Length: 245
Image 1 (cartoon, rainbow, N blue to C red):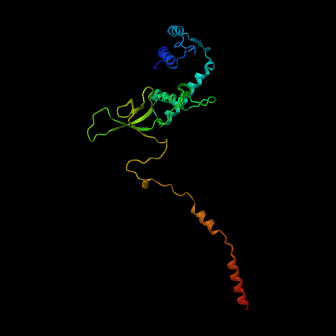
Image 2: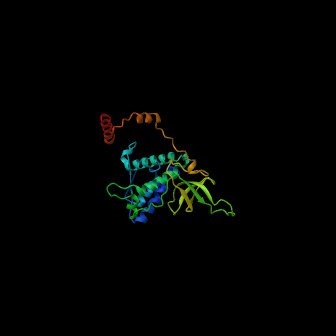
Image 3: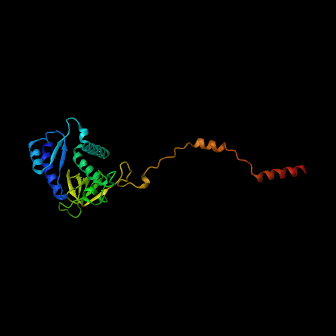
């Protein structure tokens, strides 16, 4: 949805899809008094579908607390993911979509002990194909005819998952556009980890020096007093006996 003016088109298509997929009827919806919800097309659609449209009081978001908390969670997670990976702000749409996609499959409802996806679909979600958001990936170039020694892969940034196809959404750094593909190799690594660059070996990596103070250690070793053993005491006693004789 590019703007609030598209709220009616999105809601009408979503309502029709959900009712046909679940074979259930939507009885009631609640929204605020925004102009995108309180208008003639929205009202006529709800009357035709038999849906009761309720409104919250003006400037009282706590009456619609479930949606407000959900929006805040998505916003906070998206902000964290973008700043963690140093992504530009114009990727906020892709980030929010990925946040919602992942949240519906990993967050467990406290009482039901099931994820939202499992409650809706009736089966547990498969998350084996998940990858680290914002990681570097390499996209197989199968769109353009390549010669024998041309580069086959293009560098990109992993942005999320496609909702209508089994594919990933990535940003191609060469073409500077977002595209969908399954022929991708991911470089999953945690932020801040040291990785070996091209031409670098483990021998070239610097080993941290020992920060202990040798003067103090030497001084402590010199100050240790060694107690005489029983054998040394017996030798001294025998020497004294020989001198006395």
